[in-house]
Length: 219
Image: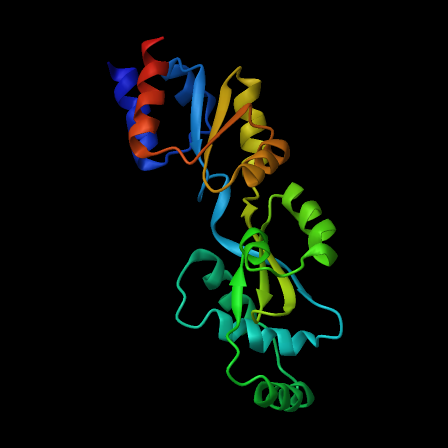
């Protein structure tokens, strides 16, 4: 009963025990680690900001800013932080004003490659880069105006500095380490490879987490 209570508290409070004594006292064989703030940062960080052919990077920055106006999703917030960190030259600002006047009425969108393909845009020139980035656990968005792809943006959550060493320590104590991840399967596979956890389960609800822990404590 005490072990079960401890395990459920572990799930609810996102605790990450790294001391040998704590683990031995509970006689646990499997430990479940929440992803955010334990193995990775909670927020996404922009990794790649790639303009298309003949597109000035500052022009893309301005267009990206238009695309995320009024959006509050995690990718838009990451891109907003990135854009705030960049500087716009006076020459690029002037060029942007000219282009903006010519493209008045066009709506900038930031969408997944799959959604862009559904919209009828050709992504062939980006497919190789997209495939490589997906293997690196990155979330990818294409910036477009409905007829042309302006550029590509990728982002992912950073693995925290202590995470890898702590996971190695847990495994040295014969612990089966399970990462409770979220998002798509691609980032989950990347995290398993980079951190060395034994198993990854993604998009697990709170009820499912408790069921996993209850099953473990009953064994």
